[in-house]
Image (tube, rainbow, N blue to C red; front, side, top):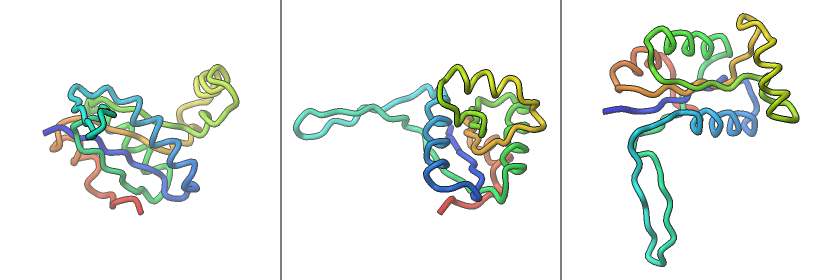
Length: 128
């Protein structure tokens, strides 16, 4: 079974973490969706894979998870502090011009087979 985990830096304020989680989740290309229909015909489409939000002690743990996901060739998305800029163009330019070592990775979403994702995320606890 496949799943998505989003690992976040618990030291960042909740509103900013929520924003990072939303962007990272949207950046993951999952292959299966389910359609949910209410009794009055309003519908929504959601991933049928579990999405689990985990808490890291700091941004270095989040960045380490991102690197491990890249090395394992898993699908991933991330959100860095450079992405809190006025326009998408500024966000892209700032992210590209900042050295990777200096990037503050706020959140990292990882998608793949549960066993592979668990190898990276097993040391983290649920975000509260």
